[in-house]
Length: 146
Image (cartoon, rainbow, N blue to C red; front, side, top):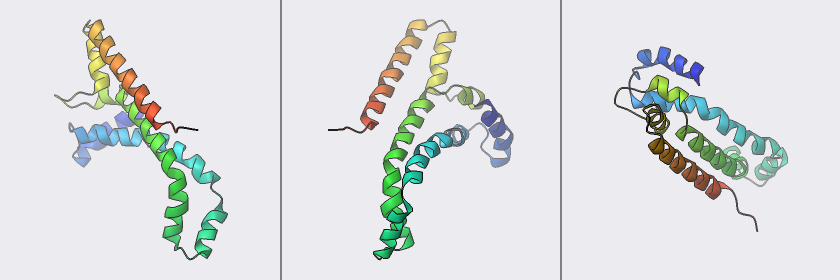
């Protein structure tokens, strides 16, 4: 997180993103892309190439075969990766502390600020809310088996 934040601090003035919310969004995107790629790589690598070849033989174009076979295999994994990223990004602190613009605040930084200011009960309450919501989101994302 620190390396990505420093890299964005160097790049942001040249891109016109310095002290904007877009800077944190771009940093989160570059930081958490690896989690989604890891989640999607496994089903894509386990998809047999014969499935796409069969779709091509059946008359599908290359793009249609890609959408019908590979994308449908990767969609649940992409959703799971997105949930993992969302739960992780809510509690992320390193990038947010280094890249926050004046007047902006993220949930992780707010909880940290409450804790540092001595408002331990407020920090604990917000932490509990984040934990319960995170568990609920993960619970809804887990596929139900019969």
